[in-house]
Image 1 (cartoon, rainbow, N blue to C red):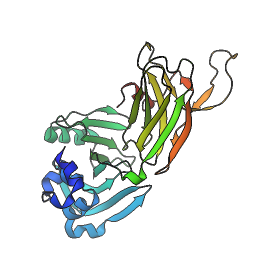
Image 2: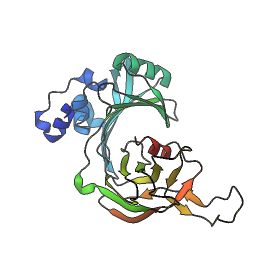
Image 3: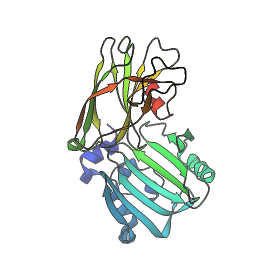
Length: 280
């Protein structure tokens, strides 16, 4: 079990916060404490911050009167949050270009950023669950975030229960994934053995999810099936007829969504939905 996991279970046992490690995301134990750690790191300056809880995301947002130095750069905004799925995130905003931020972070943390949806992603070598993200905001500032996982409150967990109904479903082993629209939430997948079409995906946060299935064998073209809204019957239509529209499912905290059918196969899906192929 990772040290920051013990911290979540017994916050009083956590070691004291060291500011330099915290700002440079080398103290996952502190980051796992969410807004409370940020308040401690800022001291009296925390009075300028705003605490909010929207759709189960507990966030402390701060505009800093005195910049904090991280990776040799000055951060003017900072936030710490506990996401609905349990992920803990520390976010810093710099008034410099994203290439400069990426280079500075890589030099300090020894990671390598790669292109990801909406920006850049790096993963810690010693713990694949610790992730670092860089993106350029619309105002030209650069946002850097580091994340450590955590458990969502069990009472908030939701589930999707359904069945594979597309042609040929269940002939081979199949991976079924609930893929969150919100990138901060974890992907949840189950793998069904041959001849099994029923599935259940648990431990989901209240959020919007794409639901996709991927046959793991005899699938040379990498076909993906997904939940979609039926538009028309294309059985006798010419090539190019669009039978369904790929849409996300909306889950509320604590709910179970029953009898969901994955009945459509799509010629192309967004990169985020295509994550079902790797299951991560």
